[in-house]
Image 1 (cartoon, rainbow, N blue to C red):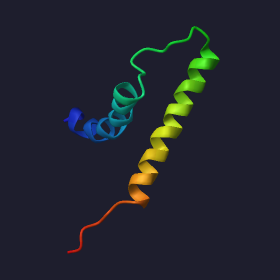
Image 2: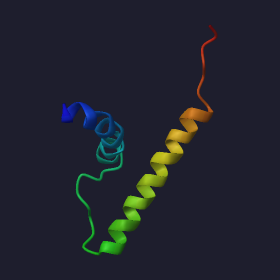
Image 3: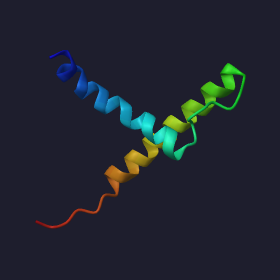
Image 4: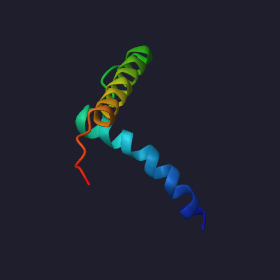
Length: 64
């Protein structure tokens, strides 16, 4: 019961983390400095959002 309620949120949240790990090389953080790691994560998030925005704005739709 509880898993059914949480699964929708989990599905929406886990996808960006999967993209970060697979495409942006963020399985492990590289730096010892917290500020540098934070900057890397913020830039990866910006890149992910730009990629999603481009996919939405420039999507090629097939005529019905």
